[in-house]
Length: 636
Image (tube, rainbow, N blue to C red):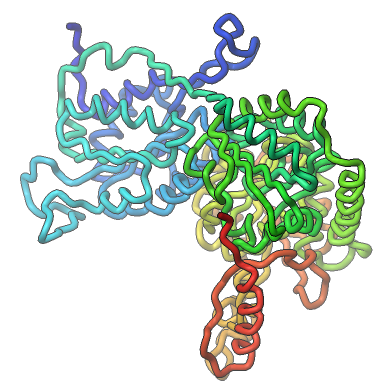
């Protein structure tokens, strides 16, 4: 047997350079002619080096060189994972990045990013350093001592947020661990964060590796078809329904099933509502697109959901925002058909389950439903409701006077007028996701990039870098509020260093606006949500803090354009899009009490309110909560 002598870290880097995914085989093999077939699975490795990985993975990356494994320098370990997640999502989960860190705090900084990746089912390979496997000294620097378990390290915190976890304590153990890691990363059902914890002494240890370990290996991403009996049952349910509704989730995008969804909508006339992850599955101007669904959805979609007798979920997890905390689908006899590649999701809500790839399943449904269409009256009903909602969007976007300070929805209106079909708009947390889900007019399959499975503050800027790396020809916009910006502006330095042309729209509204509104609704009176000086009574109700976030972004190397008015904003956004430098547009928005905002929520979200309270706001909020809670139901 031919062998190659390398360190464990060198072997791992070499192995990763030879891993590929493949989906949609060439026509000669039964697939679609002309479809891309092969993608490199791990396209680059992010890293911050410390004593736990500098002489192992760091040395291996240096020795391999950029042609074998490109290296990307980050500033924050969590942010590196966010960048990798943005990259993987833009690449439809067919390619991913690795992230290497030192032991101790570098490794534990991965936990939030790993949770985000796993919740959103997006692949990222984590390679944290670990304490010595040979235990030459005990404890070593940054070692967690656990009296009842000598083999526990801080990396064990990554176990519950990883889809696969292994600690490579011997060189030869890398072979099965690496193969299992690739299997999970490439599996559309199992994918998420994958962790290979690497003790620092083992990383540097040499071993004679079988040459076959470094051969090109292709991991086929399947497109399973639905079971014939389940398909027949689903078709009968759809044909029998009078008011069917499709809920498009993120699986539509991951499967590249947008054309198949459009064909089904064109054939049947069934309206299509979208989750945060599924928005853009149809263009906003398609007659069947009725916008976002759930707590942050449109009045059109939510009214249809409330009266739907059949809900066809495609690639959705049915989170509480989508179901309005189990209150949205209110028709007494409503039934569900779920098309999902994951059996776990396909069986939710006691549905008729189609366990299949989204594109394959949609094509099968379209063929089986040939000749079936909803009534003209139903199409006219949702068409008229869609038109009414569009007039509300127009009003929210409009700014009659260009000389005034813009509202947040007017910021979105100005951006909507600036972007092209290929632009990507990224957001994750704060009040922007609600406004975007209701109002944004998605024009292409990957234009709308909302990370709302984990809704992680700080995601947007590093994710924009990842998206731009995955799609260098597409303008990318990270929409961030001041709260999110202060969480993680660090990767601005990375964008500047690498010349990665991202645009940041930095919205200053002096606090946690989203939670402030929620606090007010639930009787919390906006406690602790404003960025202000303390008042005489000790509350944070004094003057706004004199924080200049635009100056901060400029100090990190970004080109900054300040926009004081609606007119300034329009000009700034156009200039940012035309500029080849990483650019930040800074705008302070008008307060909600002076300028109308987005339409109010059309559906409930369950946030429990104190059952016992003395303050009137909480007492009244509890009454409202009890009224809504009675509408919850279990679909059995």
